[in-house]
Image 1: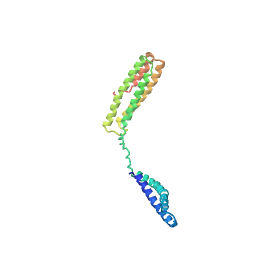
Image 2: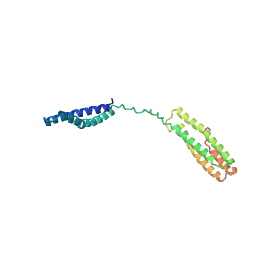
Image 3: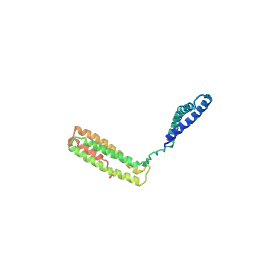
Image 4: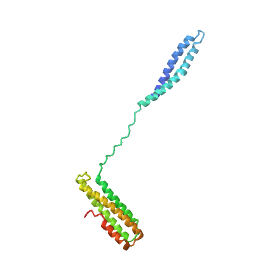
Length: 204
């Protein structure tokens, strides 16, 4: 039997008994000797049920619901382990800057109209991508040395590489724009030779 049903039955019983007792006292005091006993008992029972049992049942229902909510086992909240926070890596930040410049250069070259000049520009873009291996090597050196100071010579070299990559990215954009108007190799040769000289050479 559930908690709520037990509370309703107890409430109904208590209400009936209390109201029945009150009605018995009242009926006994007001009864006349000529009143039949059966009628008096029937009045007491009916009054006890209506005026005591029903309100007692409602009170018992409320109490039962409260008891059930208190006794109901609480569901444990799901536990989600926190992902370990990765320590800040100042080396990766600069490597990503160089890689992003290389990706933008490659994307810019793809927009140039097909020509021998574009093929030359593609080779220059590939050379820039290869330079990323040296950028990663500089970062690995800094990590191996345990350097955490941004004034460290290795970090300064990496900063310069990121700066050179960005400058080269800007130059490629300028040359690519000129090649839209003059895609011929002879017209673009001077710009391409200058661009090739400006290519970051980290391994030298």
